[in-house]
Amino acid sequence: MLSQLSAEVPISMAERACQVLMNTFTPANLPPANTWHYHQSVFLYGMQRVWEKNGGQEYFDYIKGYVDTFVDADGNFLFARDELDSIQVGILLFPLYKKTKDERYKKAATKLRNLYTTLNQTKEGGFWHKDKYPYQMWLDGLFMAGPFALMFDQAFNEPELVDMVLYQESLMRKYMTDQETGLLYHAWDETRSMPWANPETGCSPEFWGRSVGWYGTALIDILDILPENHEGRTVLIEALQKLISGYAKFQDEKTGLWYQIVDKVDQTDNWLESSCSSLFVYTIARAVENGYVDKKYITIAVKAYQGLLDEMIECDNDTWKMKGICIGTSAGVYDYYVSRPVSENDLHGVGAFILASMAVANIIE
Image (cartoon, rainbow, N blue to C red; front, side, top):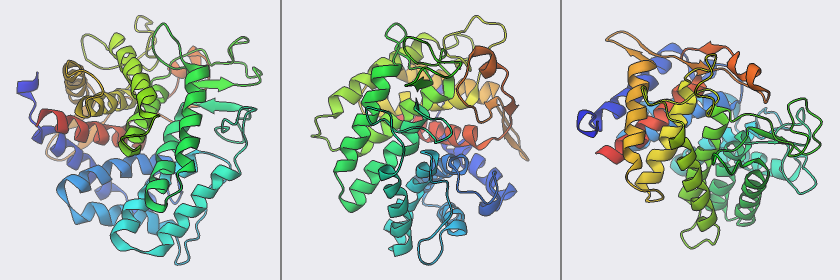
């Protein structure tokens, strides 16, 4: 498998994915159009990795064009102030500020940083995912708000943000981990009042693929920034190792991909999902690259990436299309997840695929 896939393949696929969407949408019209939203940011975060690799100015300009659609000359912009999702987009501000030294990007980042002081919290200080989901923590939230906080500390020296992120992660791990599989449940309701909440644990009942992928991606990105001598690294690396072991248990033998509900591989109405498979590939490949897990996992990551190319990507001289992407999804029960609509070229999936591509290139070159 390794001999069949050179580093040039995933890099060219990532570039192709970027070009297709850049040719289809202006930065402002990336769906959902004219909105400060993590959907666009996941895609643009992947594009940032391509820019960092090949230095193509058009990629930087496109990312800047998106941010500049919203952030005015004084650093003002409109965003939802009651949810973690808004914070994730802020990761795009740091490379722009570093390259241009434009103070409006710092001002915008500071506005997002200040959300941490206003978000509603559980009794133990866990951030509600959104105000419309009271007393609930979701795995998604660590990706949405964790890496940004560490980037803000790295840029502007606020080390208390690091402790905040590690505490949020510890609450998720405490309440949402399933010891048998090594996976984490999608959501946790402190009040146990949601219809999906387990009356004893408060957890939602399923391991929804993309949420488990967000969590792994967040762990990797946090470890990238966390200082080498920080005492919290050991705990995060152990959590990552257990998670990746859980991923490996449920990889589809035939395709190398993973299912919408990760552990329900024998359910006939469950289906292979491309965004979670991409995020799992990213997490595994980056963990191998950084020495967090054994190199034996390279085979798992490469098999999965090849599965994405074989099963989910349609590519010829004129078109590039990614299939099998679950649209935006709340917390729920099994029937809810498996009945969610599937989309093509949804930014959840394309962004995750680009991240996976760049990560795979690093472990096979």
